[in-house]
Image (cartoon, rainbow, N blue to C red; front, side, top):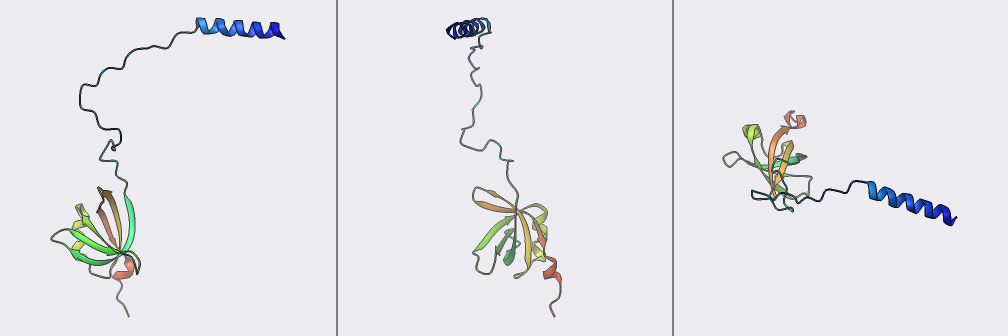
Length: 124
């Protein structure tokens, strides 16, 4: 048994002597300003989310929309950008909308607004 262990240890030592050593080169120094590691690297890495809510108020001049999720939900105000802003004039309080939005610096920004078909139907 001791002979087998000595043979194994010798083979292991021989292999470690013949394997190439890892390269130990210094990393090049950065030439430009570097971004802090704790901040997101790309501002375009925004996650688009979706919610369905009821319109509380519309301010087309400021391009904002205030909605409420559920009967007891707190009102939430979103900025509205792009093509979604052109649909603000079609909305009125009580309309149900599906909103595709992103969160940037604790501000919700609507990218797409879809008025629910149920609110387009006349009530009887």
